Image: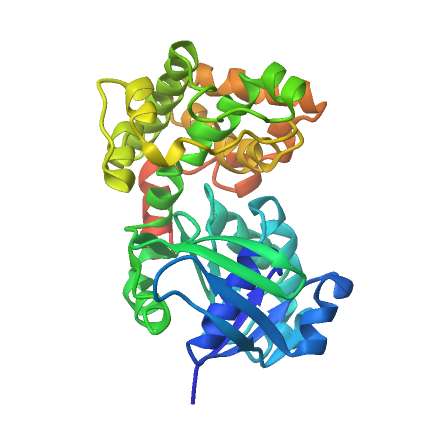
Length: 367
């Protein structure tokens, strides 16, 4: 009997994951809150998937159920994969809270920063007392896109993705279940480690905002990482990265620097961030966002930068670089991203000492 998986979200990532899981032989339910977006998949009974990777998923993936009814999606699932922008995690948590039951595993793909902490707080605030395990991936396992309403294309499946459960004492148990489908997931230590190794927080918002004029003038018709990362822009990225690593250090975590991450992910080196980025062949040809109304700002600022900066301010780390980027984003989008973001107050952890926060993410308790 194959384990039952539910994928929440039918964007390019959700379709890729649902199709791949189905081709692997699992019973898969695909949920999307807007019925019209999944109508064709429901009529066809599945998703046509293609892959650019040799030996990658290929063919028609038959799904067990396609639904816009959240209870129908959550109730039978053993593993629930949440594949939506992290700005929607709280809404998803509120929707699933009445339907969760003991033993279920919920995985955020990815959690960005403090995603699992937020998700758990929301379901508990909504009265859910079920013994469920919330876990988060450090990054999304697929590079994928949508080829049509019932089609998915997978460019690449990452080889190693850190994943952590809340609490971390359940990492082994969650990985044992996830490894049936995804042997690529590795132990991410705890959700503070996965959240503070969030490189998108450093690269995406600042690089977009500091190139605002160019993006609006050309609609993104330039090389984002190559033309956009000048020596001055790289210096800003280095300051943001240093702040992130220092915040992690204040919490007893040895986070990877951006240079270490580039070496690990792409085997790319350089004397500084400017050189290393320009030495990464994979960055050549990647165009900039066509507009400033892009997830690099509206998702990565409130769900990545704000929680890192908020943790820094709570535990005595100067995060003036991050504060300036958050303020710039708020001005450009006419939105208060501090209010919208995952602050320590909103996460309910503002009174906790470092040792209490560490105990909570490792053991699930603070005493």
